[in-house]
Length: 221
Image (cartoon, rainbow, N blue to C red; front, top):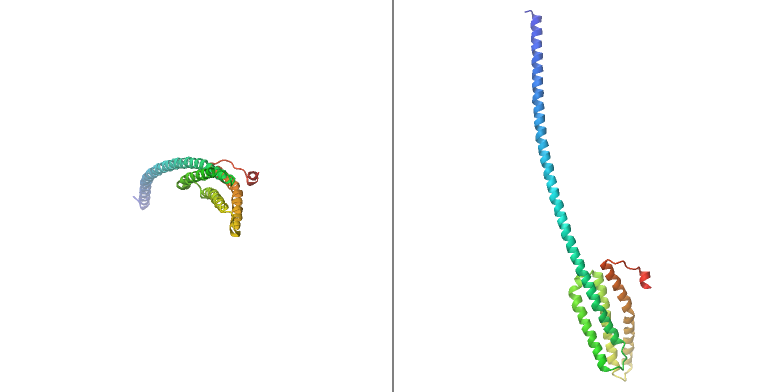
């Protein structure tokens, strides 16, 4: 074998071996790549399923909490509506009793006047006995408005009653007459305030209950 033939033979063998090695490594790399891909695909699928499961649990938890909140909200609203209706139903008789007492003539039957003030006292106590423990169901603004109206009614009756007692002390001196005049002015001012306060409170009650309410211009009419 000549050197040339040997060189060609050796070179050919090297090429073949190189090709075989390259093919072998290609197979190995493909296998490794496929194996790694399969592993990560499996892990990714597991991770996605885990996330999906957690998302479903979280969604169910949110739905449950929303349902519980809606139930609580509905319960509170129903109780709130009950308080408003009951409170309004106790406020009007209290106002009527105050008007019945303050509209009586000064020289009317004393027993009738005594009965009227007793009736007012009962209606007043009935109102406040209900209002105090149930005011927590009312918005703060509504509670303050209800308290302001009721307080004005009570002050009206108290001022009127004081003026009535002073009139029984006739004849009055100058200081006594000034006190009577001052009380009369206060009674007139409180009587003038009651109707606007009542209208404002009624509108506030309607807002809390979700009813459409008139604007200030329409309410004034």
